[in-house]
Image (tube, rainbow, N blue to C red):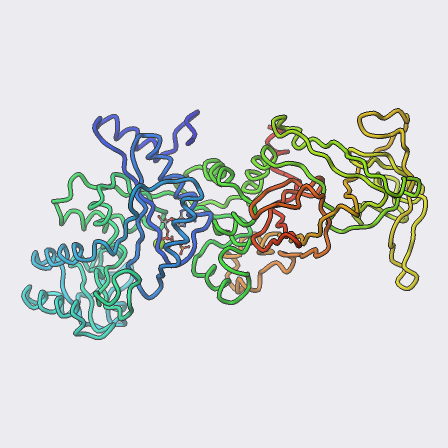
Length: 560
Ligand code: ATP
Ligand code: MG
């Protein structure tokens, strides 16, 4: 739900005011991705805004692909985008729309503008057009082709469409004002020739509409009431309105409203750069769990609810800002804390042998699945003579404050017994600790402890003979600097965090996880939240770390 307590965000306020004025108004928004890459967390903010707003006020939301540049777009992105929007939990109705559905209609509207003397074919070179556009503080220069007769324009425009001209040899421009202080109104290009097959219209078209021409008219044709976009389009708004002014048949008209895009620390959000990371092999693909893409976050273990909560938490602002990645991580912890079972997994195993525990005995220890949620029940975890604990939970020469295991020290094994370390067995050659020989206290069993022993540390563990092998992938932020896009004289590829992925190939997890499927999520006690990766197989489970347990945002929230 969009926040309703407190004040409404400024876009919602506009919607509420519009509804108060026009009782019969049906709110109609759209999400307009260009299918030239996968969606990222920034897009999620826009998706949540558009869909939730319409949902709340009884309206609807279109999914419309802005597929006006065949040189960069692809059907595979269309499919991926649909999948992501669906996974987030949104429904765009029976059909997805495409700007390319309107190519013929847009062409006819352009002819209407030419006939009205509002558009002309310019045969200046790209370079000339750029030069004559000038700079904002001085007027530009009018093209020598600007005042050619309407008939000639119609003829040339038709020829452009029929493919009689080379790419770059001419464009159709709106005739507005070469002296406007707004550069977007200096006779903007409406159509350019692109000689590339389009993923939907094939080779039918040789000319393609520019974003500004296609967008507002597509909004109008679909009956969009509120066209929400990011701040960089604010300067395009006069053009958005100018086109609609020329086409009075479109009433009522859509209204463009801009909001601040989402920027996240340690994250790049430009699709161009994300594509470069994929193509350059810096990550394993668009859905690499380190990518800020929706499919990457999904593979990393994020839930749709956590992404929605995050999007609503950051809110809708009018000014650019930078959001702490920690807030996104907080949102997923908050959700996973409630929904995931807490299980035991040893990422870096060290074997311990309980020398006084009977050789063939196995006990079933009862472990509560999630203390936050009784309905999740409990499970049995086998306990036996040989166990694995975390290598870092043992120190041969521990400082005083180390409450874990050391020679002669005692700890409790979670939901099991208290043990004491008697002997450290080392590899003769390397001197590395190979295993620990310990004794357990039979009367210290969790739940029926009569031993009277007091220990400070509790360790997680798995039974060696029952454990399942796993590979664990520890992910961290992809960039080592807070604002990779802001480091102007550095290539962002040199700012990648070399420790963004650490693979632990020999982890051991409790048998309860044996039949886990990709996207199953768990809390590994003391270690963080993890989910099963799509690379997982029954004989070799693969887990991705979604996020560690330490939450700096939760502490801040409590202090307030
Ligand atoms: P990029 O700049 O990364 O290439 P884009 O904005 O060109 O992305 P589109 O596919 O055109 O990508 O975006 C679809 C919609 O998502 C647009 O309405 C755009 O304003 C919105 N959007 C894109 N990035 C963000 C962001 N970081 N925060 C909020 N909305 C965004
Ligand atoms: Mg765009």
